[in-house]
Image (tube, rainbow, N blue to C red; front, side, top):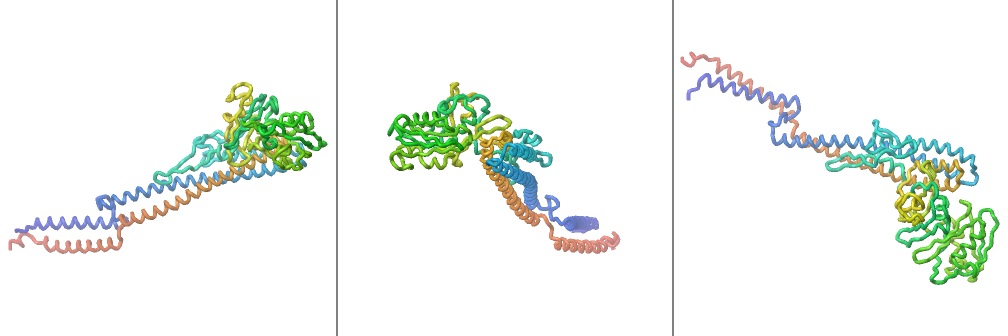
Length: 508
C-alpha cells in the first residue's frame, strides 16, 4: 500500500485531536475534582449519581421542614410552660382566698390580680412566630383568642413531611392547648331552669333518678349543683321492708344548736323521714334519689350553700351504728364522718363567667364515663330551654383556661366561697391538661430531633456513595495528564521529522 504525505498528515491530526480531547477532559476533571462532568462520561454511573442527588435534595427539604417544626414546637413548649406558671399562681390565690381568714375586701383585691393573669394568658395564647399565630391552626394570620378568651382559630393541625410518605404535626391548636377536655359543661342556665327529672348514670351502673320537684322548684344552677354534690345514704331496698327502723337523729348545721328528731312509726320510711327533716327547718334539707328498681337513697344539703352539717344516729335498737339493717344502714357513720362525699360518682360545679352561669360535671373517679339526661316539664328533652339545657345533648366536652380564670375572678369579686373552692378543682384539671399537652409537644420535639439525626446519617451515606461514582481520583488524573503530555510531545517530534520532507525527497 502506498503511504502518501496526505495520509500521514491526516493520521497525525486525528491522533493530535484525540489526545488533545483526552487532555482537555483530564484537565477539567483535575480542576473540578469530578470524574463525571456530563452524563455521556459514564451513563450508568451518571444515572446512579443523579438518583443520589435527588435523595440528598429531598433530605435537605425534609431537614428544612424539621427545622420549621422544631421552631414551632419549641416556642409552643415555652408558652405552655408560661401558661402553667399562670395557672399555678391562680391556684395559689384560690387556696389562699378559700379559707375563713379571707374577707370580701381581700377577695376583691385578689380579683384584680386574677384579671391581670387573664390578660397575660391571652397574650400567651396569641404568641406569633414569623408573623404567624402559633395556636390558630390554619388561620395563622388570625389571633387565636379574642379579648374575652374565645378561640378564633380552627382545629386543623399543621403537618409537614419529614421522610418519604411520613408527615407529622408541628402545632397544637389553642382549643387543645388552653382547655381541659376531660370535663363537660352545660349550655347557659341564666333564668328559670324549671323542674323535672334528672337521670345520672355512672359507667355501666343503674341510673339514679332525681325528681327535681322533690328538691327544688325553678331552681338556680347553685341549687342543682348542691343537690348533685349532696352527701347521700346507702340504698334502701323497699322490697325487703317498707320501714327503715326507728331511732334518734341528731342534726346540726353550721354553728347552730343540735336538733333531735325521733324516728318512729310516723316517719320511718324514706319519704316520711325526708318530710320530717324538712319540717324542722333547721338548716338541713333532705331529698330522695331512686333507681329503676325502686331502691331509694336519701340526700342531704345545707340550706345555706357551703355550710357544714352533721347527722348522727343513735337508739336504733340494734346497738350498732355501722350495721347493714335498720336506720343506721341508711345513715351510717361513713357518711357522718365524710358528709362532702357523693354517692353518684359525678360532681357538679357552677361556672360563672362572662358567658353566664353554666353547670360543669366531672366524674369523682378519673376516666369513668357517665351520662346525664333529663325529662322536664316542657316535654322536650333536647331543646335549649328549661332543665334540658343540662342534658347530655347540650354538654360541651371541654372548659377553657380562660373560662376557669374568669369564673375565679367573678367568684372572688362576689365573695362566693363555693365558687372559689370550685376554682381549685378546675385549676387542678387545667394543670393536669397543661402537663399532658406540654408532654405531647416535648415528645414531638424529640421525635423530630431523632428523625433529623437519622436523615443526617442517610445523607452522609448518600454523599459517600455519590463521591465514589462522581469524584475523580486526583493522583490518577494527574498521571493521565502526564502520559498524554508525553504522547503529544512524542507526536510533535515525530511529525517534525516525517512531515518536513518534501515531494523531492520521495522522488530522489
